[in-house]
Length: 324
Ligand SMILES: [Zn+2]
Image (cartoon, rainbow, N blue to C red; front, side, top):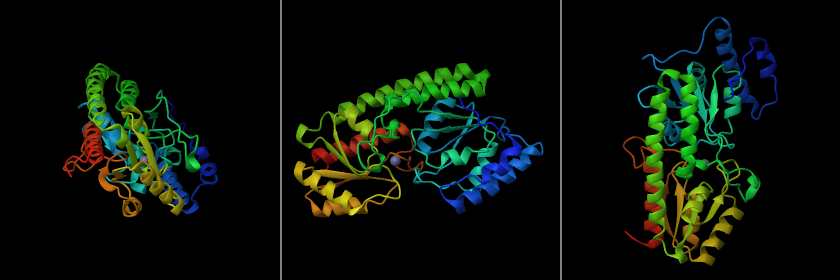
């Protein structure tokens, strides 16, 4: 469990290191510097208002899984809000202040959160990588070829590994409640197995000729593998270089060549590129899938288990033509 080391004397050296975006880095560094100076003056990470320790996750999916493991013993919050784009997120000064007061930060890892290393640099808060121990699938296309696909949570069986890592991290954070974390984790892992079985059973109903999942981001590799679907996407990972004319042409050609009946896009990006594919082929727009964020509480996927059920349902209905 890596814990960031904290030395007040190193602050000046850190702020002069080469950064991806100079202006943003300068703004972040100024906030971190002021926080560190406060910490040097005797401030320290503390508990929440209700006395519970505070766990901060990088995105809403992890927060929901973490709440299932934490039960009522810890306060769990997400840095990014429902609906946010999470790969290239730019943390605000408020996020950094919040993180400096947390007792534990959880990130997905596998290069999901491009902003995370810089975000935690200089914060005296332990963090745990919840995908540790998951067998990653590699990205086969684009600039990310050969890199791990970060969306490992799209297999509920991988999320069982996330749960084990959370049980371990929470038990180190709050040893008095270790038994509760273990019991909560075991109960939730049973739910994950059940939703995995439902998902694969549901998608097994899609006839062989229609078993192709075409999405905007290449975020469904783990789900497609588990469900036995072929996968094609317009771009590999949400980033600056997405939906180029070449990428859209490739998707159009694939849809035409394979008579793909329906295509999809995700809730956190514009579906305009996929509508171009729809316009150029005979495919229908099959619906919005959720992957990088839950919906708000009154939306279609307030929990991770809902997210998997919703996506399996939308994909199955669109590819089989049911409900149209
Ligand atoms: Zn993504």
